[in-house]
Image 1: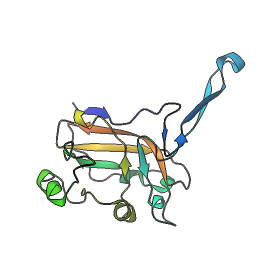
Image 2: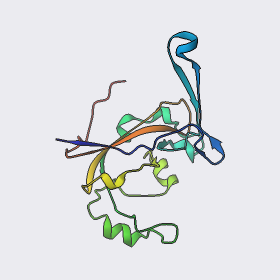
Image 3: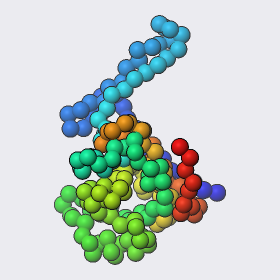
Length: 170
Protein backbone atom coordinates (compact mmCIF):
# COMPACT_ATOMS: atom_id res chain seq x y z
CA UNK A 1 0.00 0.00 0.00
CA UNK A 2 1.39 3.48 -0.86
CA UNK A 3 2.54 5.72 1.99
CA UNK A 4 2.02 9.51 2.13
CA UNK A 5 4.70 11.58 3.86
CA UNK A 6 3.82 15.20 4.61
CA UNK A 7 6.88 17.33 3.78
CA UNK A 8 5.24 20.68 4.58
CA UNK A 9 6.53 22.98 7.29
CA UNK A 10 3.80 24.25 9.66
CA UNK A 11 3.12 28.00 9.44
CA UNK A 12 2.51 29.80 12.73
CA UNK A 13 1.50 33.32 13.71
CA UNK A 14 4.63 35.37 14.36
CA UNK A 15 6.93 33.21 12.19
CA UNK A 16 8.52 34.69 9.10
CA UNK A 17 11.67 35.49 7.20
CA UNK A 18 13.45 38.49 5.71
CA UNK A 19 11.67 40.74 8.19
CA UNK A 20 8.19 39.72 6.99
CA UNK A 21 6.10 38.23 9.75
CA UNK A 22 3.21 35.78 9.41
CA UNK A 23 0.02 37.28 10.86
CA UNK A 24 -3.18 35.38 11.69
CA UNK A 25 -6.40 37.06 12.71
CA UNK A 26 -9.95 35.90 13.40
CA UNK A 27 -12.33 38.69 12.37
CA UNK A 28 -15.34 36.38 12.63
CA UNK A 29 -15.69 34.34 15.79
CA UNK A 30 -18.26 32.09 17.40
CA UNK A 31 -18.82 34.84 19.94
CA UNK A 32 -19.66 37.60 17.45
CA UNK A 33 -21.41 35.70 14.63
CA UNK A 34 -21.81 32.00 15.53
CA UNK A 35 -19.09 30.71 13.23
CA UNK A 36 -15.37 31.23 12.78
CA UNK A 37 -13.55 32.82 9.84
CA UNK A 38 -9.83 33.55 9.87
CA UNK A 39 -7.41 35.45 7.65
CA UNK A 40 -3.65 35.39 7.29
CA UNK A 41 -0.85 37.41 5.76
CA UNK A 42 2.56 35.99 4.90
CA UNK A 43 5.57 36.30 2.59
CA UNK A 44 4.98 34.07 -0.46
CA UNK A 45 8.46 32.55 -0.03
CA UNK A 46 8.15 31.59 3.64
CA UNK A 47 7.84 27.96 4.80
CA UNK A 48 7.03 25.27 2.23
CA UNK A 49 6.33 26.99 -1.06
CA UNK A 50 6.66 26.78 -4.82
CA UNK A 51 8.54 29.43 -6.83
CA UNK A 52 7.03 30.70 -10.09
CA UNK A 53 9.17 31.70 -13.08
CA UNK A 54 8.50 35.42 -12.40
CA UNK A 55 10.33 35.08 -9.07
CA UNK A 56 13.60 35.56 -10.98
CA UNK A 57 12.54 36.24 -14.58
CA UNK A 58 10.79 39.54 -15.28
CA UNK A 59 7.62 39.10 -17.37
CA UNK A 60 7.51 35.32 -16.88
CA UNK A 61 4.49 33.35 -15.65
CA UNK A 62 3.06 33.75 -12.16
CA UNK A 63 2.25 30.89 -9.81
CA UNK A 64 -1.42 30.85 -10.84
CA UNK A 65 -0.29 29.79 -14.32
CA UNK A 66 1.67 26.76 -13.08
CA UNK A 67 0.30 23.68 -14.84
CA UNK A 68 -0.64 21.14 -12.18
CA UNK A 69 1.36 18.53 -14.12
CA UNK A 70 4.53 20.59 -13.47
CA UNK A 71 4.20 20.39 -9.66
CA UNK A 72 3.82 16.63 -9.33
CA UNK A 73 5.66 13.61 -10.60
CA UNK A 74 8.39 11.08 -10.05
CA UNK A 75 11.25 12.23 -7.84
CA UNK A 76 14.63 11.10 -6.59
CA UNK A 77 16.05 11.67 -3.14
CA UNK A 78 19.77 12.45 -3.14
CA UNK A 79 21.17 12.29 0.42
CA UNK A 80 23.24 15.40 1.14
CA UNK A 81 22.71 15.76 4.88
CA UNK A 82 26.48 15.69 5.46
CA UNK A 83 26.80 18.98 3.55
CA UNK A 84 26.11 22.44 4.86
CA UNK A 85 27.36 26.01 4.78
CA UNK A 86 30.95 24.86 5.31
CA UNK A 87 30.91 22.13 2.65
CA UNK A 88 29.72 22.86 -0.89
CA UNK A 89 27.75 20.37 -2.95
CA UNK A 90 29.90 19.57 -5.99
CA UNK A 91 28.94 18.12 -9.36
CA UNK A 92 31.00 15.02 -8.46
CA UNK A 93 28.96 14.53 -5.28
CA UNK A 94 25.68 14.79 -7.19
CA UNK A 95 27.00 12.42 -9.88
CA UNK A 96 28.14 9.88 -7.31
CA UNK A 97 25.07 9.97 -5.07
CA UNK A 98 22.46 10.65 -7.71
CA UNK A 99 22.93 7.64 -9.96
CA UNK A 100 19.26 6.73 -9.49
CA UNK A 101 18.12 10.17 -10.74
CA UNK A 102 16.40 9.90 -14.10
CA UNK A 103 16.72 12.29 -17.04
CA UNK A 104 14.80 15.52 -16.44
CA UNK A 105 15.11 15.38 -12.65
CA UNK A 106 18.55 16.99 -12.35
CA UNK A 107 19.29 19.88 -10.00
CA UNK A 108 20.08 23.40 -11.27
CA UNK A 109 19.98 27.02 -10.19
CA UNK A 110 16.83 29.17 -9.99
CA UNK A 111 17.26 31.00 -13.28
CA UNK A 112 17.86 27.87 -15.30
CA UNK A 113 15.07 25.79 -13.83
CA UNK A 114 12.50 28.59 -13.69
CA UNK A 115 13.43 29.58 -17.25
CA UNK A 116 12.52 26.05 -18.31
CA UNK A 117 9.23 26.26 -16.36
CA UNK A 118 10.45 23.77 -13.79
CA UNK A 119 8.76 24.90 -10.59
CA UNK A 120 11.09 25.00 -7.59
CA UNK A 121 9.74 23.50 -4.34
CA UNK A 122 11.49 24.96 -1.31
CA UNK A 123 11.60 24.52 2.46
CA UNK A 124 10.39 20.98 2.90
CA UNK A 125 11.15 18.89 5.96
CA UNK A 126 10.96 15.28 7.13
CA UNK A 127 12.95 14.06 4.12
CA UNK A 128 14.53 11.44 6.39
CA UNK A 129 11.13 9.73 6.54
CA UNK A 130 11.41 8.90 2.84
CA UNK A 131 12.99 5.45 2.84
CA UNK A 132 13.24 4.74 -0.89
CA UNK A 133 15.62 6.53 -3.27
CA UNK A 134 12.64 7.13 -5.61
CA UNK A 135 9.13 8.31 -4.85
CA UNK A 136 6.47 10.65 -6.21
CA UNK A 137 6.03 14.27 -5.12
CA UNK A 138 2.79 16.23 -5.14
CA UNK A 139 3.07 19.99 -4.47
CA UNK A 140 -0.08 22.09 -4.77
CA UNK A 141 0.58 25.84 -4.50
CA UNK A 142 -2.27 28.27 -3.95
CA UNK A 143 -3.33 29.93 -7.23
CA UNK A 144 -2.36 33.46 -6.22
CA UNK A 145 -2.91 35.49 -9.42
CA UNK A 146 0.31 36.95 -10.80
CA UNK A 147 2.43 36.26 -7.72
CA UNK A 148 6.01 34.94 -7.82
CA UNK A 149 5.35 32.01 -5.51
CA UNK A 150 2.83 30.55 -3.11
CA UNK A 151 2.57 28.42 0.01
CA UNK A 152 2.02 24.75 -0.83
CA UNK A 153 1.12 21.48 0.83
CA UNK A 154 3.78 19.03 -0.35
CA UNK A 155 3.62 15.26 0.09
CA UNK A 156 5.87 12.41 -0.98
CA UNK A 157 4.19 9.20 -2.08
CA UNK A 158 6.20 6.01 -1.57
CA UNK A 159 5.35 2.57 -2.88
CA UNK A 160 3.73 3.29 -6.25
CA UNK A 161 4.74 4.12 -9.79
CA UNK A 162 3.57 7.61 -10.60
CA UNK A 163 1.92 7.98 -14.04
CA UNK A 164 4.11 9.78 -16.58
CA UNK A 165 1.15 11.64 -18.12
CA UNK A 166 -2.24 12.94 -17.01
CA UNK A 167 -5.31 14.40 -18.63
CA UNK A 168 -6.02 17.71 -16.90
CA UNK A 169 -9.47 19.28 -16.82
CA UNK A 170 -9.66 22.94 -15.81
